[in-house]
Amino acid sequence: MMNEIMPGLALQKVDERIMTLNVGPQHPGSGHMRLVVQIDGDYIVACDPDPGYVHRGEEKMAEYRNYILNIPHLERPVIHDSCNVLYPYVLGVEEILGIEVPERAKYVRVIASELNRCIYIMYWLAIYGIFLGHSTMFMWPAGDRELLIDLMEKMTGARVTHAHFVPGGVRNDLPPNFEDVCLRHVNYFEKRIKEYSAVFYDNPILIARTRDTGVLSRQDAIRLGTTGSVLRASGVDYDLRKKEPYDAYDELDIHTNVMKEGDSYARSRIPWLDMMESCNIIRQALQKMPKSGSVRVKLKPNPKGKGDQTVYKRVESGRGSLGCYVVSNGKPEPYRLKLSVPSFRNLIALPYLLKGEKLGNMPSVYWSLNYWPVEADR
Amino acid sequence: MSTNSDKSATDVKSEEKPVPAAKPAPKPVAKKPEEIPVELPAFEKGISDKIVEKFGDKVEVAFVKEDRVRINVSRENVLDVAEFIRDGLNFDHVESVTGVDFPQDKEIEVVYHIGSYSDSTLARQIIVLATRAQREENPIPGNDSTKLPTLRNIFYSVEFHEREIFEMLGVYFDGHPDNRRLLLPEDWADLPPLRKDFVLKGR
Image (cartoon, rainbow over all chains, first blue to last red; front, side, top):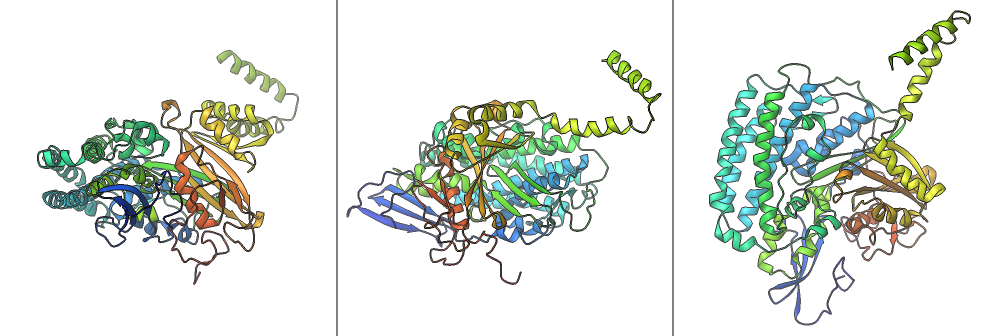
């Protein structure tokens, strides 16, 4: 298999110097995926990612369930970011069914989606820390994440898989006094993540290990169609919350974090900056949110769209732009549903980044891609 | 504006008096909903006009909506149109590639969602480029007529997406350097699973 031409790589003649390493699929450093890595001494010559070990056929399952029944299983690809992964689907179904969402629901969605983004990034940061051998950076995010999970529990009733967004709004209104609790938690959370810079981001060991490793140039980032933090770390100013605002995002003031270096350090710093921006957005949303009103348009059972329609909606998730293409043929079930997930789109950059790197840098480059194997496989 | 509306209002009134009132009344009501969809978003219309101007009858504009333009192309012309979208219209990456099975048409549709990072005026826009491959009842993936030209040489980002379409729907992409399995197990010997005749057990 390895003798075939591999994507985007001019493979050198395989001789005795080259050794093939299987990293994964059970290896904790690769997540639920396999990386076939060829090394010459300590240097990576070629890398062939092999995802698919957690492929669950979400898209096929969606063809058998109606628009409402699809909600809980579609958030399974990224349970830590369950609101965002469901968001484009819900927006798409709303367009197919022709529903207008109440104003308050739009803000509740923004708050839920930003809280979820922070929860996801904290989880990712914990893993990134532990694979660089920084145990404190595993414990702190894993602990501080609980703050926001408690908030989401108050809001939705579930700690991780919320199934909170439904076509027509959100499932439940905010509990009483939520705004105050949320503001307090978010303020503390922001203060807390600022402390990470001293222990992690300004740490000379981290900088030495991640600076100038796995550099992705601006042109390559665009050409490979990467997205999210990977794209923004390479100097492309692109955030869908600002470029194509959905729901209440056009009424909020959003700053896009961009770095020009394109190395692992930039890619690991951008999500951290994003969390602070999320705190800003949550505070704005809490202020601008209508204090009362409906949060959900009630739908008929088995809602269906009129005739043949196709919709492509996208949102900015914790990992980047997440698109959902829904084909409807007038039945209660979607005819075809495709999730275009950021992890899958960013995966194509991995062989480029790893080529010529030391094997010891593999975890830092791989995890800096903000990759979530379960999402890529769907 | 005010004078115009006054004139038309008076016109209608003058017409109503001699003619029975029921007839002219439904006409403007019927016209209005027709006019609203005709009024396409100007920027998106400009994009689709450029493509139509270049290719004429070879392309079919399926819809022009806010931020979305959908173009249907035959498989012979998909390469030329994609190249024009990249070079002439400044779109630079493919976000999503979807295969949709249509057994009743004996065709499989492959839909490319093309976006632009480098041109900030196009940041909201997505061109939906759809083409169709022939579908066979008993597929032998890779060795039957279900083939399309690959867009990898035009948009590099389609590489993994097209690999996924090949295993999930059996559409072979001619010229793609790497048509190995991606997500499915290596020993998968059933129908391509996203085809409609692959039915989930118990459903």
